[in-house]
Image 1: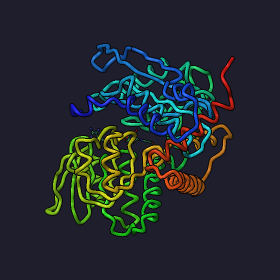
Image 2: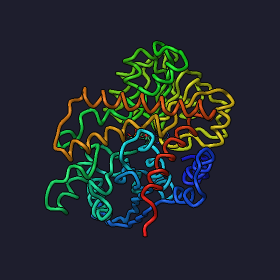
Image 3: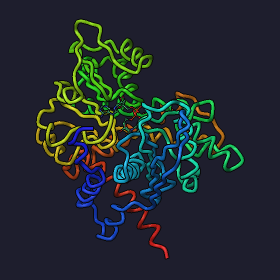
Image 4: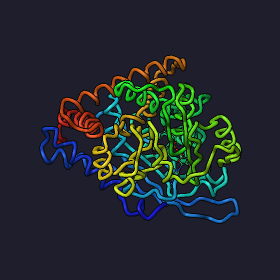
Length: 420
Ligand code: NAD
């Protein structure tokens, strides 16, 4: 993590965004204050027996930001930089995101401060099971439903589901989403966030009257979101010119041999460039490449006031949560860069998580075609709604998405009233 990232507090940014967006909503100050606070925060310190028989204590969080529109929903992150304010911000963004795509969920997030890259599979399983037990009083299909996020995956969700089910005494598939398909996971869920990124990128291109064929795409991050998005951009005829992981990026102005790169990455957990035309670049260099579409799909606070003036893309589609700071937003807007903001662009994941939850509760299995068709319609409709607000109020796409999401949450809160 760079010192720049250390300095930036994502929760302060999330609160600032509420202040910016609520200027366009007719809300009383008390309601705005409520939206800036999380509802419930649990911090746990728990022991895990490591492979060498030593015991390590880890710190984990589960935070529910708002449940006015439905059960709390949000991923679980395993990363060394996880802390209270990061999880608060991510929970808040989940609330707005669910509301932007109009699905009946509130927002939550969780995480454990750890470095899974330095842990064995057994240690990750033990950590997952104990963490699930520690936060189990907050979880449940009607209460709070986790999903994968950075450095967690369907296997981690399977352990969470199993641990919660053991506690209950019967199988509860609907307690998590992003599970393996064999355990009630939805077809199309693994690909959903990356596909949603590509669907909204296509809408942005259509709006700007630019073709996808030959469009140059640079992608920061090559995990669930970045890796899947890269494959789909490639399939649609775009040219993915750069992709990166936490260590480095690979660049080829003429377009990368993605299949080879992704296969190598899956096998050896790293990139290697073995072609004359490819070169290694840093993550910062990747962000500043001349391209048509830039997809930050790694972590927060990557585009800041420090590098925003050097960003040369025409469109940014935010696969990651919170990759751009408000100061950078202003610079990018002055440069005329069109932004599809995170709470719209990466909402494909929570949308198909919702489909998974619905299938679990009804004990149904939808075909992949049905999932993708519903996902596409929701993403296209949401893009159109945000664009319309952006035009009618003459505000940037991010503010428009926040106005849509926060407006829906505020209205649900108003209708429910304050108890007692
Ligand atoms: P992942 O763990 O599958 O992949 C993360 C990727 O980011 C990896 O390629 C990793 O090498 C890279 N990375 C990590 N630290 C980095 C750094 N400092 N600089 C550059 N790259 C770095 O995670 P993911 O699920 O793909 O999530 C990526 C982003 O998308 C996160 O912001 C996450 O919150 C967001 N997101 C994920 C989903 C989902 O369904 N998985 C949904 C919505 C939003």
